[in-house]
Structures are given as structure tokens and as C-alpha cells.
Length: 72
Image 1 (cartoon, rainbow, N blue to C red):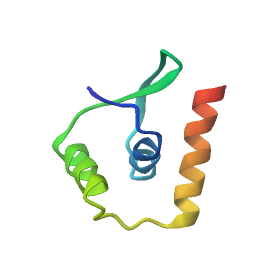
Image 2: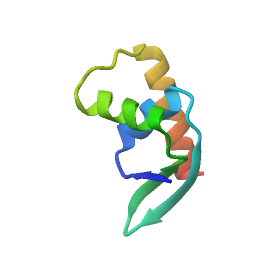
Image 3: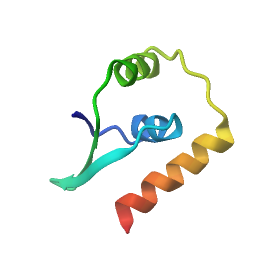
Image 4: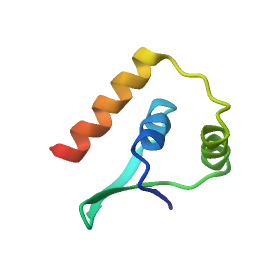
């Protein structure tokens, strides 16, 4: 399992088709879990090295999806 507290990384992963397997609230911080894979790790690396290009509209939609999960 891949674990992250980074909200925007989570939104990017969801945008790219990765499914959140679990969401927990840990000390008032959201923690998101994904199935780990080589592809996911490569995407995370590209995210942190600013190598990704995404549609702003699709990114906004992905943010709304993640927020809905967090607050519902």
C-alpha cells in the first residue's frame, strides 16, 4: 500500500485513474492509501519533480472528488 497525506498528490493520482483504497483521519490529518505499483511510484516522482501536465478543469474536478470523500 502507498500512503500519503498530500491532498494535491491524492487529487493527481485520482485524476490519473488510481483508486483511493482507504481514507482515515489521523490526528486531524487525512491519510490516503492506494495500491502500490511501479506506475504509481513513477507518477509520484513526476509529481514531485514537476514533470506533470494536467488539465486544470479535470484537476478541479478531481479535487472536488477527494473533498467529497473526506467530508462525507
